[in-house]
Amino acid sequence: MKILVIGSGGREHALVWKLKASPQSLRIYCAPGNGGIAQDAQLVDLKADDIKGLLDFSLKEKIDLTIVGPEAPLAGGIVNKFMQKGLNIFGPAKESALLEASKAYSKETMQRLNIPTAAFEIFDTPDKAIDFTNRVRLFAAHYPVVVKADGLAAGKGVIICRDRHQAQLAVEDMMVRKVFGKAGEKIVIEEHLEGEEASILVVSDGLNVIPLASSQDHKRVFDADKGPNTGGMGAYSPAPVVTEEMHKRIMDEIIYPLINGLAKENKFYKGILYAGIMITKEGPKVLEFNVRFGDPETQAILPRLKTDLLEVCFASIEDKVDQLKLEWMDMASVCVVLSSGGYPGEYKKGFEISGLEDALWAGSPDTHIFHAGTKIQNSELRIQNSEKKYLTDGGRVLNVVSLGDNIRQAIDKVYKAVSKIKFAGIHYRKDIGHRALERYLEDTYMGVQAD
Ligand code: AMP
Ligand code: GLY
Image (tube, rainbow, N blue to C red; front, side):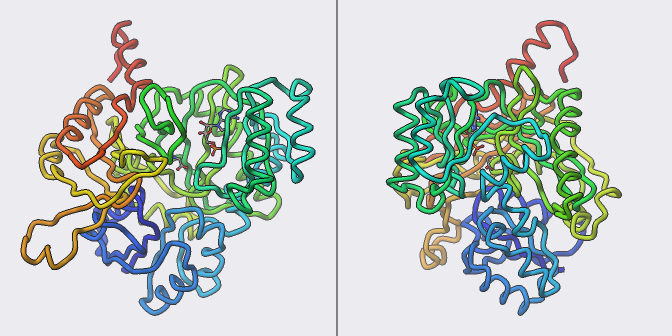
């Protein structure tokens, strides 16, 4: 069977790695992939948003299943185009992808379906938005407020504003100076929610859903959640903030109302639905919906999944999610992202990476390295020197993931592995998993069985 994975990050390397573990015999392609994925799949020199190129390739190669990593091709309608040609593809159609591609659409959908989320207003002219920032107290809350560009802005279009001045600056940046281009033509201003975040990913076939293991991302670049937001500096799974009771509430108050509500409107949501949740004092509220696997959540979740990923994808495509059973390792996993110095701002690329083998030894067993921004040093050099050399080639460079019997073991192990990896300017957070660890230590201290 031929499988195509679309994307080039750590998430896609984790997907490829998981596919490789399938009991079925697979030929795996990845477009465009990265240096690490090149060891596990055949790279295809097509960009993730080159829908026409990907379609032509899939028809020519008779690809049996395509798995889409990033949001851009989903928002661009890749699923619709592949399905029109009778190709199997795992993910939502363009209309459903609006849940991520338009924050205004997403908020209106939540309002219509009574799904708990931050109070909000939508604006399509700067004057009205500025006027609103002057009378925020009339709103559900007070400052801080969150100003969000409506469209896709590579995770950068969300600005938390402490006062009117910051809010007006954010509005002007988005709507007048157009720093996010078309994405900022419309904006959402919403109430700032307080609490702990969690990511709940579910698989849906449009009518039935099954949740994947819970996880928690670490979005800020520095320890203790300081510094600007990034694509994600690390994740762990499960997330103990999502207790059994909280999980039930998230499913009953958010996931089922969304999937069932959309189905009643003849909009059948297929693929992965990712709900970014804030667990507030009043209960779970949606921060955002994404229409794909999370990055880096996927790198933490998939190593715990025992079930074949192919089964998961085909259950969604063939409307059989009600028959899908997922099996999980009863272990904690922690993913630490190693990034280039300067990320998420400017950074340099092309530095040699060392210590990958040592890291796997140090974290053995159950440590994995998923590549993100890496490439293999030019092939001529490779011929002279049979050992593969990787160079940094992006902001987020590597993901190191370790499993442990509990969160403490997983954290100890992953940082032992991480300490072996070197490249110029390397940066990583030293506190990934700290919230889960605090809970674990508290439970252990209180004499509760925490494992
Ligand atoms: P989003 O892309 O909408 O998830 O926003 C990115 C990040 O900004 C979230 O993961 C939160 O950390 C933060 N954020 C977004 N909306 C809010 C909100 N209403 N209240 C507090 N934090 C938020
Ligand atoms: N972990 C955040 C995202 O995938 O959007």
